[in-house]
Length: 359
Ligand code: NCD
Image (tube, rainbow, N blue to C red; front, side, top):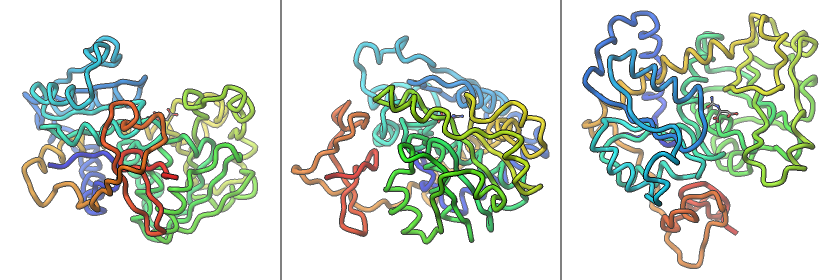
């Protein structure tokens, strides 16, 4: 069975199949209208969401299916102390596919270990957000006509922005992608993405401190919100919250064909004066999210009983009782998932569930 927990759970070919299907759904929506009739999607959202949850709901409705679930875990048995594994075992009796968002990192991976139906990760803490990645890839393709041969700048909260982490991972599969990281010191991209993703996969990246110096070279500018809810220290948040703001003056430095993406919600990092610029693609991106989620639901259903579309053969986890994950927001410290690790090429260990480096 295929789950989508991390963008790398899909091969490049599977990713391209989903994107092509989304394009076909855009061109011929009537062909897909009944394809999920009498089937149900459960949306289990343990963390606030507008776009992602409604986009899954709308996608399933477009396909003729039904949706059940919760958007506030306090109203479910979670408030009685039920684990995510038990919850998906139960919900798997009522729905054919589950989309789950959780503030705990690794929650969906842990849930997928026992789930009787495909699990879609709709965001886990500051770790991953693979369906936003599919949305972003489709948007880049539609705006630029290609995903290969691009220079993409990521701006803002690269430390906690799970959409950034997942998109960089997925882009390593494409040819000649150059990554520019634009962030203050406090919000720099985590080392595991730089080392285990960019360096390992040979993706060229550079870190810069101003937008101005790189604007003219970008094909895509990926803006992000500074994620207040992930900061443990309010003063640190106040110091960086207005770090990088996109306005018309900065847009004037960019290529005429550049596309501005943002997973939304925005706070103040893109001034509304930019919205009328034809290069502002972020509201088109929202709509693409619905189409790509339709395509994903159709494909996961199609692949469910096809052994040629199972989960990738991850390396064997290392089980060493002397190692512990110190990330307090990881599932192994909140629900006692077993401590499991993967060994990186450079000999360091990372948590199986949240990718934190183990000291
Ligand atoms: C993002 C998320 O939830 O990670 N939004 C989204 O899914 N559209 C980004 C954010 O919350 O800033």
